Length: 262
Image 1 (tube, one colour):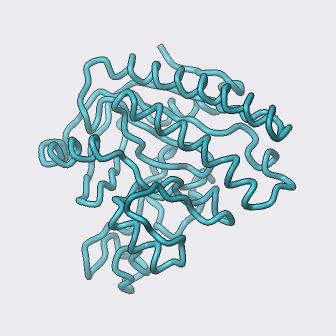
Image 2: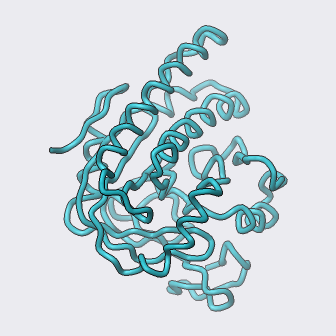
Image 3: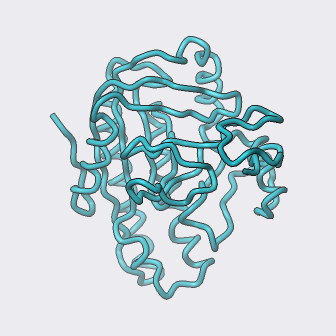
C-alpha cells in the first residue's frame, strides 16, 4: 500500500506508514468498517468513501504526486473534473481561524468522549444531474454546492470531517466544544438549504439547468475522538447509533428538506 503523504510502499495490512506514520485507513461513517485509503466504496455497506481533510501543505504533496492541479497557497483548490465525486473539493479546509483552534486543543481531545451533533448532507440525484454534462460544466455546477455546504458548517464553528462523494459529514461540538452544538447544527442546516435554493435559482436563470437540491440529516449523541494528526485529519468513531442515525436521517430526508431525531 502506497502512503499518500510520502509515497512509501507499505505492507498491504499496514495501518500506518512505516516511513512517516501517516494513517493508511479510514472508518466508514455509516457502518464503522475500517477501509484502506485506496477504497472508493466501503466493502461492508457500499457507502462511497471520502478523502480525509488535509492541510494545504499536505495537500500540495498529494497534488504533485497524483497529477492534481497546481497548488497555489493563496487560493482555494478544486479536484480534477474527472474525479469530482471521489475527492475533496475544495481542499483548503478547515479555514485558518478554525484550524488554529483545533490544533491548540488537539492534545486534550484524543480519547475523550463527547456529546456532539453529526450532520450529513448530500446532493440528491447527483449522477442523474450530471448526466450529459461536460466534466468542466459538472465541476462548475458542483463546486459551489460543496463550498456552500462547508461554509455553512464553518459559519457556526462546526468541522467538516469527511467529504463523501457528492456530500459532506460534519461535526458540531467536537473538536471545538460548544454546549449549544445541536442548535448550531440546525442553524447550519437551514443556512445551507437557503443558500442552495438561491444558487439553484441563479443557475436556472443563467443556464436553464435543472434544480440542484440537497438533503440534510442530523443526530446528537456520544462519540470518541480517536486521533487528530498534525495534518488536521480527524478520525471519529461513534458510540452506539449516533453517526448511523444521522446518516439514516439524511437518506430519509426529501430533497430540499432537513430531517433530525428528537
